[in-house]
View 1 (tube, rainbow, N blue to C red):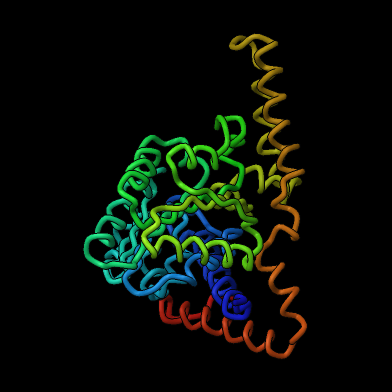
View 2 (tube, rainbow, N blue to C red; view 1 turned 90 degrees about the horizontal axis):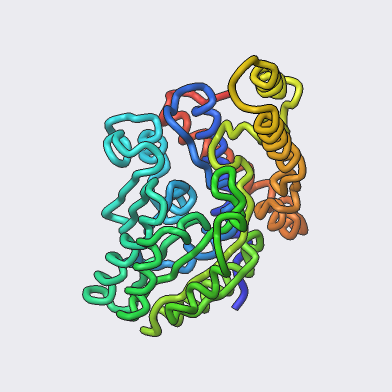
Length: 342
């Protein structure tokens, strides 16, 4: 059986357009606090969520928007929650990170690694109350260094809980490379608990769909948990307004904000030694150079662009779909704000 790329593309593009609209509202100051987008993760989310059925549950991290939309949570309610409205999904108290939907069996949290205990609880309930249903946990590579996630994987293995652990690995923990903060191999960690581990290209929705479908089928059959390791790219970095990315996108505007205070600090009398100042200067410049070489700048790393290239064989259908999705997003904005944002 082959994946329905049109359906998967629709899920992915709607999520991308919704998050881009949310980003614009954040940039205009209408959404407060940090904003963590899942742009770049769409292939992973769509490939997995498209296999879920009624009664299945999801434990999400602080980038839960895409999964919630694809699972069918009302986007108007979701956006009103981001804006802090009392009639939002969680009465305006959850922001975009701490969201819950009892109807959909979905919970998200900004606490790194908390997806582990949450999914274990969902899976135990599924095992006891809803045979052949499963629970899925989505988390980043940073969560793999959190004890509560490791403990949850161990428990899931011992009790053969119906869990799919999905690690969305973008190679970064905020500004730290994962390879500098994580020992060993993530797949080997999972296997150490007796959990089968599968690695997949998180930019290829077809491959994610195929691999996750096979894993979920085994989980529903009572074979216990599976670990899915999918690599991806976060196009906005850890959060919106991520400074290294701002420097890359608009160096003339952003570099003086770094260079001027850094130079003043370097030349200031007293304080750190010359060696320490030089080391600090090198560290800052290294971050900027790394950002210039970052894979986020390569459009080939965009999972939506990859699918679209395949679907361009039917340009009329593609345009109709994209036009309809844009209208859908505009209708959401109109319902929430009373007007369409320019």
